Length: 389
Length: 159
Image (cartoon, rainbow over all chains, first blue to last red; front, side, top):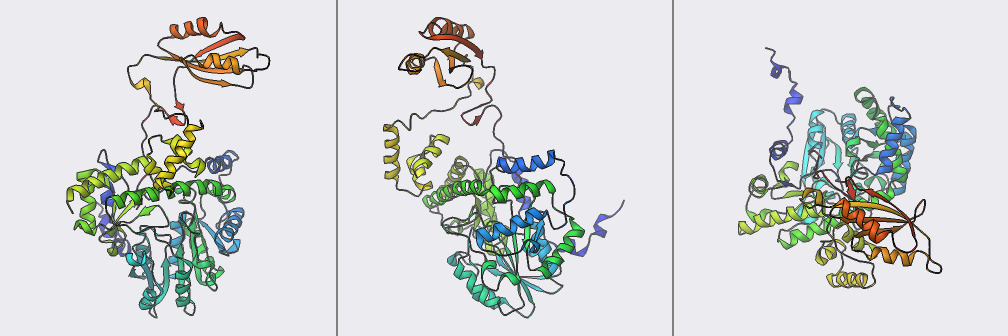
C-alpha cells in the first residue's frame, strides 16, 4: 500500500489548517441551527451582471483571455479605482485574478523571500499568515486593540519593524471586526513607511461596504502607490463570490513578477466572470448602493439587538460583521461558540479563528435577512439570560 | 426616509416601529407619525399575510377573468370597475391596455361556484360585453414570494 504521508512536503505539512473548519463541519450535520457565520453576501449577483456573463457564453466567448485579463476589464478597473477612491494605477498596472485570494497569494510570492518578515495585524482574515509561511517568510503579528477600534497604529508598526521587514499587510475594512481606517490613521502609517524599503499589501476587498463615511485607501496617499500592492475584487461588492474574480494593482516592476507567477499557475481568470465584471464596474453602482443600504440597516439592527442584551460590541463601519466582546460570560471564545451551537442552536465564529488576539470575542455575520438575525439574537439572548452573568 | 419605510413594510409587514426606527436611524415617534400619515392618506392600505393555501386542506379555486367593456360616457371605466370590485369574491381588479379591458382575479370554493359567479353576477353587469374565464392551476409566485419549496441557504462556509 503506497504511504502518502511520506511524500507530503514539509511546507504543506507545516501549514496550519483553518481552526474553524472542524466547527463548520460539525455544524453542517446539525438541524435547526441559526447560522450567523457566513462570510459571503446573501444577495444574488445582480441580474444585469449575470446577464452579461450569460451573454458572453451565448456569443461563444469560451477561450483563454490574455494572462493579465481582458484589456477592457483592466481599463475599467483602473477607471473605477480612480473614480471611487482616487487610487491611480494605469490599466497596465492591473492584473485580473481568480478572486482577491489569488491576488494576495501572488503579491506575497512576488515579494516575500525566505526569512523576510511580514507584519500582519490581528485579528484578520486567516490566509495572510499561512501564505507568508508558505514562502518561507515570517509572519509578525500585531494585535489591534478594541479601545482603538481595532485600528493598527503607526506606533505599533514602528515597534515591530526590523531590518528584515519586507512587507506590511493592511486589511481594511476588516474581517472579522468590521473596523475601518480613517485618512489620518493611514497618513500616520504612510509616514512610517515612506523612507523605508517596505512594501504595503492592502487588501481592500470590502471597500464598497462602508457605512457613514467614504472608504479611504492608503494607495491614494502621496508617495504610496509606488510601493503599494492594492488588492480588490468583485466578491463582496457585487455579490460575486462564486464567480472568483478579483484584481491586483501594483507598480510595474512588482506587477510583472506577479503576472509571471500567474501565467504559470492560473494562466487567466475565467472569461465569463471577466465579461460579467466589466458590466459590474460600468453599471453596478446602483445595485451596490442598494445592497450597502440593506447591510447598513441590518448593521444598526444587530448592534441594537446586542445592546439590548448588554453584550458590548464596538461599532463597526465596514464589511458585514459585528465583533462583540463576550468576556463577561467568563468563557473562552471556542467554548462559548460551542455552547451556543450545541445548547442554543445558534452558530457564531469564535474570534480565535482569526488569531490569538481574538480570544474573548466572536464574529457575527449580518449577511442574512432581518428575520434570520432576529431569531439568532433571540437564541443568543436565551443563552445570555441562562448564563446569569 | 420617505419611501424606505414603505419598501421595508411591503417586504415584511410585521416589522415593529422600533425595528424600523433602529434600521433607519430615526426616532420611534417619528416612524409612528409617518406610518399614521401614510395610513390616513391611503398610501399604506393594509397589512396582509401571504398564505400558501395549497399546503392546507382548504378547498378553493382561483380564476383569472378577462373582461371587455363599453366605457360609459363621462366616466370611462370607473363606474364599471366599482361595480366589479365591490363583490367580495373579487380579489384583484386591474384596468389593462391591450386585447381586453379588465383583468379580474376571483376566488371561490369550487369551479362551479366561480362559473356561477361569472355567469350570474359578473357578466350581466351593464356595459360588460364579454368575459373569458381562465382557471388558475398552480401558483408559483405571488407578490414577490415564491410558493412551494422552503428556502434553503446553500451558501458554503469557506473560512
